[in-house]
Image (cartoon, rainbow, N blue to C red; front, top):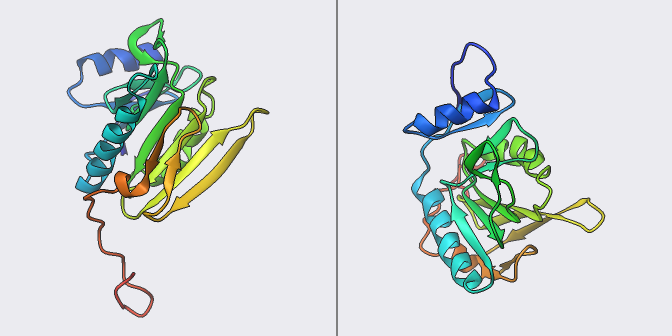
Length: 203
């Protein structure tokens, strides 16, 4: 993800006008455009596995998934993102100034990569927590079987959980669904681990 050159901060309406005409997607934070980079094969494989697994489990429940073409406004104006996966329940609500900008996800899932990991855990985490109806934000590694989840509690605080290993399952708090990590990472080839301090292969 990189910052697109621009002479001054943009307004929300200017950003949305650019997106309607653009061939590639950009996210938007406080007046600045961020061009979205292409994803790696493991990233895409993990996302596709989750879309299928979660979508199948939600069928007939009144909840459904949407993938990375769904633009979300994160709470207040000035912050727009394209999450890897969104989950909504009931009718989808859209922004008054843009019929393609979703306002009411109950869950957001981002698949982490080297180029987006810090952004997903920092700026996006804080922004997503401002969405009134969001119940959980899930961050899924694409280079190892690790899932981090932040869940809104009844008192408005957030609980952080980490799941590690293919023998665990992702139990969603926002919807009635459980997806084993073995299914999330089915047929995903992880990159080799970096060497340790002695130069030996990681593992």
